[in-house]
Length: 519
Image (cartoon, rainbow, N blue to C red):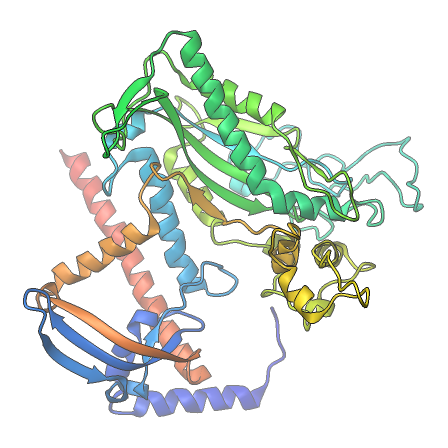
């Protein structure tokens, strides 16, 4: 975002940089801030840090944060959103890539044999809630989709479309460019069903859960039909269970479209069941193929719907179903465009996004801030937010006065008496309250395991830390750097370290390639 140049602020920041860089403690301060380097709003903590011997449990050293530079301990915020903190989102994206990719190729505790399991990449989209401006290319002739220069078709070329009930044209002959701000906007804001869309976003997680269950059941039915026996499993308590011989593990990312509706990209992998070790990742039975997985997904997407509970504005509830476009593709096929690395990078990229594609971005909304974003007569995003706030209103009132009391407003947010109350909580997300990256328990490693791997690596690299545990009794005192000059210095140093690491990785890869070519 472009801002006006303000000489006073720039001069003040330059003075802060010179003052910090000229201090004798500058090198120590820069090393002290390294763990939070690049973070836009680090967490500042105060308290006591103790070093405890891992073997004896004795405290070998103790220090208060008053002895540290700036008398505080800096910790990165860890926000996954790229629009909030690019550096923390970069770390999160790397972890997300590992979570997705390990489930495709193995590694970090996942056996490499998972790379031979049948797997498909599926995109589930939302249905239409009204015509919107779109960019459609019927046939690609470009060699690189990332630099596509193909000419799009007319948006909605309908010569006999006429006008809607609000006297808006139902046709659009424009060939929209990729950065056209009209993309995703309804042709008629008054005809568009904003209420149905935010309710769809809100219940899309339940629709996904039932679809996954339906696909599992269809695969079980195929096993029965083909005579593939169930597997006898003995639990830790000694109880015997007979379980289906095949199960589906998934990794899923939610992406917000320009129109404000979420759609899901999911990797679905077929696994078998080991009777001796139910948690082991083994290939599915020979009688089940990737064709059966595709058939189960298509059948579940066509059949499964969810009818939401009654609402005062919709006594019959809303019908929640998938759109017509359910795309199922196989990866790592001969001559195919999709590889495990490309798919993992694609999903990891969207794991750091939120509602930025719609043009709206805000923190959680409250009664004090809702009027800044919601407007029943405003643009598309403003009407979606208003629909969330209106539908999520308390549905029970004080019988004596006929109006909602303060306690009613508080209790009516997320209780069983008001199943739509969460729409207010997630109004800033246009109704979607789910996680943007989810996975099955057995699919791959977790984010916590990846953090543990990094901690273990740092401890093994430093002999002094190998036998020491750091215990902190810390208190939050604030967020952000102490000055704009400090933020510029730390972020610049972090950027240089990151660029050096990237160049180093490229050099190592090049040397490895040269060694392989020479051999």
